[in-house]
Amino acid sequence: MSERRFASLTLLPGAAWLVLLFLVPLGITLAISFGVTDELGNALYAWHPENYDRVFDPLFAPVLLRSVGYAAATVALCLLIGYPVAYYIARFGGRYKYLLVALVVLPFLVNYLIRVYAWTAILSDEGLVNGVLEDLGLTSDGVRFLNTPWAVIGGLTYGYLAFMILPIYAALDRMNPSLIEAGKDLYATGWQTFRHVTWPATFQGVLAGSVLVFLPAVGDFVSAQLLGGPDTYMVGNLIQQQFFDANNFPFGAALTTVLMAFLLIFMVFYLRSAGRAAAEARA
Image (cartoon, rainbow, N blue to C red; front, side, top):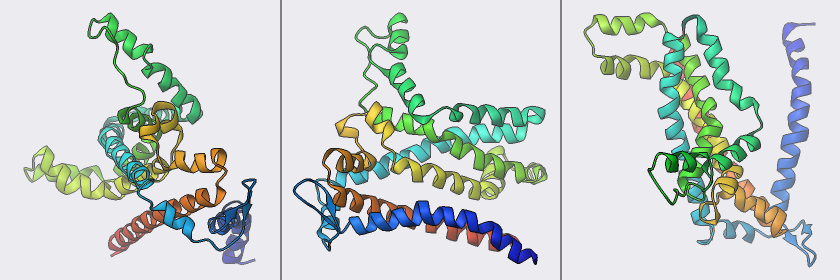
């Protein structure tokens, strides 16, 4: 058996898995998105494209924009926090490098829902943070953390921070340290060396981390539901409400389809950028 044929055969289980558990459900969702509901709330297949008109209704547009804004803010915070962490581990971790990477990943082995519930207890009106502030005499009435955009963005940042750190760390770890030394030899300042050497060399890692953070964050609903309120709900919460509360499966499916189309465009942009970078590296 040739190597190419053997490789093709090993792809069959994974391809079948993706077809059954991704493409088939996606096709069903797309079909339902054009459907209607009967008197009992059951979804019926039909041709009703008006479901997509409702997606862009002014009533729901703020939720879509809020989701993109929260996800973009999460990417920015993850980058600000994650890049220095990844840089320190890659450049100064030494023999403890892999231990530090393991410590970054370790909290994310705990279920996401449990971690968000923990933040709910920490940030509640009678939680740990307010207790410490009151003990220090900084406040007497407590500070409202929950049900605010900052709590939701903070929860998203905590939830997906490792997805930013790991790609950047991988890019920094692959970079030849002599490039930084060459910049110093040319009398460049630390900022100049970073801007002209380190950042371009690790930009693909930053872009990969941004994609890995943005894609799940924009569709997240747990952080907004537990750490926020009705004024901070995201598109994931809206989709959940349409499926489980309103029993409006066609509109929920239309929302899901539009969200996935938006994420697909974002993913295509990343793949094209990565492809150009790979072509330049080969050249």
